Image (tube, rainbow, N blue to C red; front, side, top):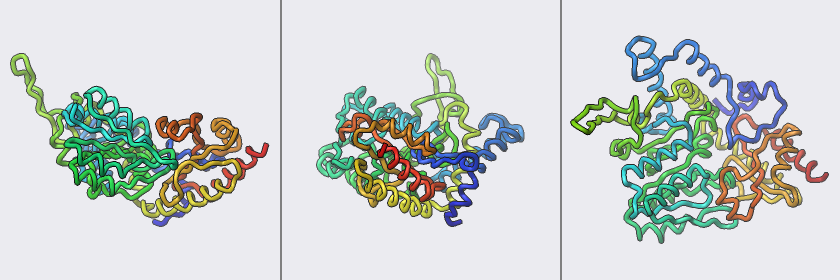
Length: 407
C-alpha cells in the first residue's frame, strides 16, 4: 500500500466529524476505525484473562495476546521474548531504570550520561536512580539548536568501566534526530549500555533493533494510532535473560515455594517475568492492529511523506516576521516544528489557534532542561504531523498564525 492520504483520512472518525487541522500528534495520535473495531471485538467476544485459564476462551485469549508480542517483534526486527508490554514510554523507561538499579547495573561506579534534551520520562528515572546509588551523573549540554554534545562520548567513555547512556532518538521539542548509529558504536566500543527513548521515532521511522546495538528501547502505542495504556520496552535478549525482575506478582513466576523462613522463586522466561499482574489485554489487540496498519502503509513511505510536510512547515514558518524556530534545519529533524513568536506567550498562540480549528501543543512539553537551556522560560508552540495530515493543514496553521500575529 502506498500512502494515499485521502483514503487514510477516511479511517478517522474525528476527521470525518470535525473540521480540524490536528497537529498535536507528538502528544498523541487520533484513532482509526480499525483500532477501535479490534478493541471492541476483543471486549465483546474474545475477552478473558491470559496465562491463567485452560478453558477454550482463555486459551484463545492467551494465544492472541502472545501473537501480539510476535507482531510487534516482527515490526521491530526483534524476537518475541524481547518485547515487554508496559503502560507506555514513561512506564517503560521507569521499568528500565528500576531493572538496572535492582540488578546493580546502576551503582556507585556507574557513569550516567544524560543529554539535556531528554523528555522528563527519560531523564528523571535514571537521574533519580543515579542519585540514590551515588553514581556519577554527566549532563550533556546543548548547542544553540538544542543538539546534545554527543562527541563528548569520545572523551567520557574511555575513562569509564560502567557507563549507561540514555538517548532520545528524536527530540519531542526540536525534532532533532540523534546520531543513534554513532552513539551505539561508541557504546559498543567501550562496553556501555545504551537506553533509547523511541517515543518520537518508532511511530515515524523504520526501526531495526537487531542492528541498534542498544540494551533497551521504549515507546508508546498511543503515539502510533494505538490506544493509551500500552507501550513496549524492548530488552536485548541476552540482557533480558540475565535480569531478575524488579517487581514480582501474578503472571511473573513459575512457582514460589517456602523454604523455612525464606522463599524459593522460579521466574518465568522473558518477556513474561517482566509482565507482572493482569496485562493490557484489550490494549494489546489495539496496538497489534495499529502496527499491522502502519506496516501496510509502510514506515519508509510514512517517513518520506512526513519529511515533505516538515520541509513545507519549516519554510513557511521561517518566512513569518517575529517567529523563531527552535532546533535544526529540516534535514536533521523529524515529525515536528516548535517555535516562539516575539511578545506573544505560547499559550496565547495555542488558544487562539485552537479557536480557529488548529490543534497544536504549547508549554514545556515535559522537557524543562531543554527549554531552560535555550532560555525559553515560557516554553514553545509545537506543531507535529502524522500520516493523515496534509499540506492543507500546514497552510491553515500558517494562515491563522499570520492573522493572530497581525492583530
